[in-house]
Image (cartoon, rainbow over all chains, first blue to last red):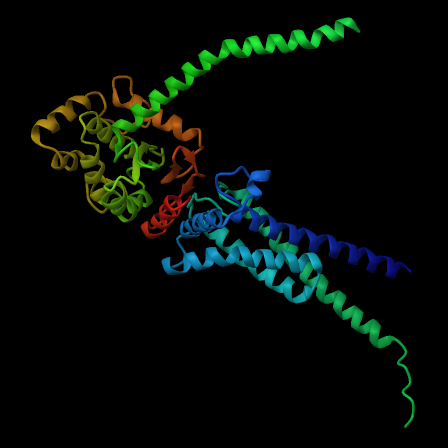
Length: 182
Length: 234
């Protein structure tokens, strides 16, 4: 009974963690795609047009470029792809589909972001992070926050693998139906 | 009950009267701010003020990233989009205390700006940044006078030297006898409002509408792409 309660608690924690990860990815994508001239989290920031989308993604490309780590030719493709990957990851995490694989991808993304942030902070680049939209300074707090996101991604992924394994064990322990003799 | 009923119209009326009285003073304050802005821009700007895009750049003459941004991004922009009337470029000084000679360089540029030679002196200092900055291999460091002199005629240089009287110091504090320090302080105050933590930081305006400020080195190809998208907006 106690073991069952622990598993239920674990499942709830996994659900909360998964939804938190989904919220992080969706908020990050929203910040990158919402119109630059609109104040974030307002109705006008939801009025996304093809022109505003293009501007936002080019602005994001400038932010990526300021990290001084990527070759010039790669900056624009990254800026035009990353927000959509974040949306896809957010949706997958919301639904819980293929959680183990999505968890691995999300954790790899967070690890890469974290490494990038640590490097830029150590180099005193003093640039904008670009993580959740424009005008967001890269500070020590951002390093801690990104480390937290990485840890959360790791915990959710490990949890998803453990849960999957337990479910498989539980299914295999069920009495197998006897097949009718031919 | 009656008192409550009366109170609301009285308070509304009072608010309206106060509002009406404060409008002229607010307008005056806004006008004065606009005048200050115009004066700040007129001295250290390139291009036409009526250009659809305005780019305000906060620079530190000694920061290597500012040097790279000037040479690789602003120079091609000045030669094309500024010359074609698409962009109005405004320079603002933001000498960071961590750079020993940045304030002194800003003083030279501001003195030159007073005689209308901002562009030439700015270019000379950025082109020769490694010749006078603490990051360069040349010795002695912090000697930028010859570079300023090379960018001006002897008569112009004499005028700039006169303006620099009381200013020749590496001190980052505002000097009492240095007239150009007032302008630098105003630039710093404008930057603090953003607020600026690093240079170069720039802010783009399209027909008066501000876009978020951005910091760091951005290649001209990307900035040009952004400008083109703004200009092609309906």
